[in-house]
Length: 207
Image 1 (cartoon, rainbow, N blue to C red):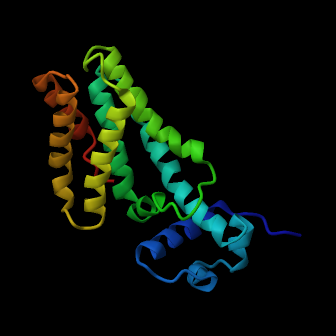
Image 2: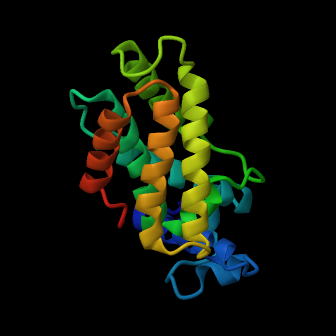
Image 3: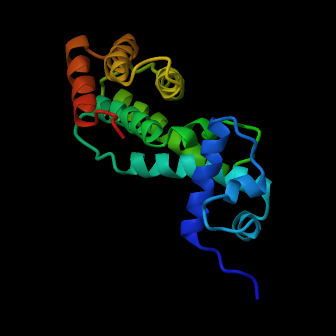
């Protein structure tokens, strides 16, 4: 009788693989399961082998990001809500830095690429709402703006995750970047600073 998959073991193996990858440790079946209480067969039971494991590691990062974004409540302020999604992105990265690094390792295919893409589409939709509700210029391209916002945020978060920047530098740098980007897209500077500041004050990206 084939062994039944255990979600707890699956999660342990995913997180251990991500940690080993981040630490540049050789990832072998034996090294992966060492100390977990699982056998090497667990990798085949849960993932079908090592390629499936790496796919699952990447996917888990996006799954957790989606959950963080889903927890962001919609308010009457579209600029605040756009920035709050960026705060959720940062919190997700700092809560699981090993998974965050693995999310963008394109050497492994994603098991569900559309689910990963959906996290970015949340930013695009939020940017479109800010434009449509008159906070940004009518000519603003939501996808281009979302790409700029994500790229800037990803760069800052990556520097913090890698230890190049201290954690307490993230909020002020991200706040200044968001204000500069969104005022360039047409938002009123004072109103923008208020919206961005409130979004970061509510979610200090501590994990």
